[in-house]
Image 1 (cartoon, rainbow, N blue to C red):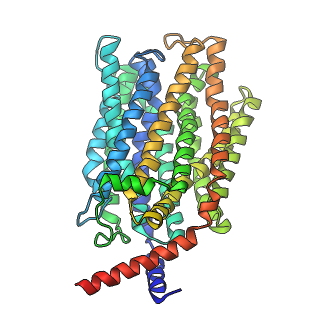
Image 2: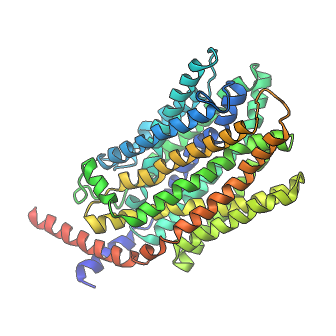
Image 3: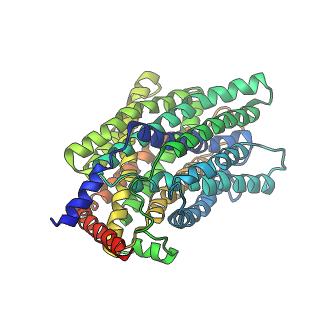
Length: 477
């Protein structure tokens, strides 16, 4: 190894994140999930049962969620380029936590507002526009820098795994808060302030919004992009960002797998309310099912331990998929036995926590691969498409497919009791659709491993290039 390589490697390893920085990073995803999981878990129910939009059809809730997601996916590409072109005294990704925290909270609040509009097109267009703003344009603007900042925080692989674990833990806590308390609080505020679920959703999303603003401001204040070198990584045109993706096979594999994975994640979250209310006959069990997801923290804690011990991120993700699939597949054996259902659901949650966490960290490695192959460091673009784009499109299908399946089976939101066919459709979407998705994702991820084996070579060569570029820049001065 050359002296330049040794120097660059030493500098990279010297970037150790403090506990405060890791906590600040965890707060970004905690804030994101506090609002985004509220959308992904309850917007389907809000549209069909509170805003009274049909579940299926050309102007139904399913169409809204699918069309909006594709519009949102376009914003992921735009936001990736915007982040790549950001150069401030605060860094490249960090300032967006400051600039977008209030718009994020406000747009989610508006999305859960149900004004008195005529049925049909007026409600459809109001829901579509506000949903695109909240879950797409603004959320993507938050999600993109959350992921793009990781390679800029540190170049140390172990530190990246650990920081990503903190982020996932924060996301789990944010998800737990909204999953456990949203429905009970919606009911409580709806009764005590009048207006039912309509008023309840407005008050609860306002509360979550204020908390999210505080968390993102803390993150902005306490994070530092140690590995951001604007003198070496100049802003690049959007066409060059596409070049960093062309031939970047580990990134392509990860994007395809993660996009499909989010069909399962969105389905599990979105259909839980219907499953609790119409199959188990107790809507409040939604909070129990979703609240149990906090135990996913155990999976999040295990994730970097498994990855660091095995030195095999692909295997770690596959382990999560297998555990998650087993937990889902066992649920039908429980019948209506709630304690047993919760146990099997918890197994699925542990696996899902491991599986969903790995791609966020692996994206940083695909940024390195793209730079190694093309010389273009497109962290914003590659991570935006690899995270926000996948989340948006995958979640869109994860909402559209269940609603269409339920609609075809005769689901009717105006009825307190659903037909046997509708209940079977709800059960299929809640239990078996995620299992099918896990199998597909697992097969795709098998192709990632050979690129993962190249990472030590890639990091060493990039370190040498960076050291050489820094030396040339110093001489030019």
